[in-house]
Amino acid sequence: MALTVCTWNINSVRLRAGLVERLLREAAPDILCLQETKTPVDKFPAEPFAALGYHALAARGDKGYNGVAILSRAPLEPLPHVDFCGKGDARHVAARTGSGLEIHNFYVPAGGDEPDRNINAKFAHKLDFVAEMADWGRGRAGPAIAVGDLNIAPGEDDVWSHRELLKVVSHTPVEVEAFEKARAAGGWADVTRDLTPEGKLYTWWSYRAKDWALSDRGRRLDHVWASADVAPTARRVTVLKGARGWDKPSDHAPVIAEFDL
Image (cartoon, rainbow, N blue to C red; front, side, top):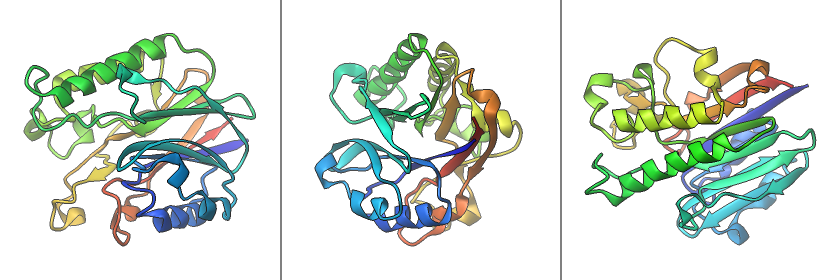
């Protein structure tokens, strides 16, 4: 049975509900994981998505920032979220499908501008969050897919310029090391890179660029991980780069992974 899972930092689900509807109509993933929804759950615009067949929803939200949600056409069993760093912010949501597959959706802190935990509390929070992801993953078991905006571009081909971004938050060596420790601790496969081992690959392009497509100065911040018992079933991962050019878009593009489970 084929299962498609999409991850997308939507940068306000209420502002961009129409773009979510377009994605659901055109790409029709079985499961859609959204980050940075920026809305309390009681304000989440679930109705138009349900009208398209996505009746199942597991969500957490904060007013104006953070927020994660899982939408599905098939029923979901909500699972307890993990309160990473004990801050109570909505950065993780989880659910289980009818087949027993766990879906974990993450929104890792961006980390601010200065890559020094001693002078930048946001960067310290990011590193602590990812370290706790490693501890969590080490103790987790069972078939699972973990997706989300992890706000780290780990490889040289995951950024437009490895040399120029080595001291820029999202690609610094300390972040990449933390990222790989978290991935390895949980036994996760980086599905996107396993299926596309070579070549530049981005999922985010800054709003600051006058012509984001022409300059193409992107970063691969959005990831699909799979547990060891699920990873061999991965068949395809596609970055829907065109969505970055939709009207009033998110600065992230959706990433869709297909599995033969």
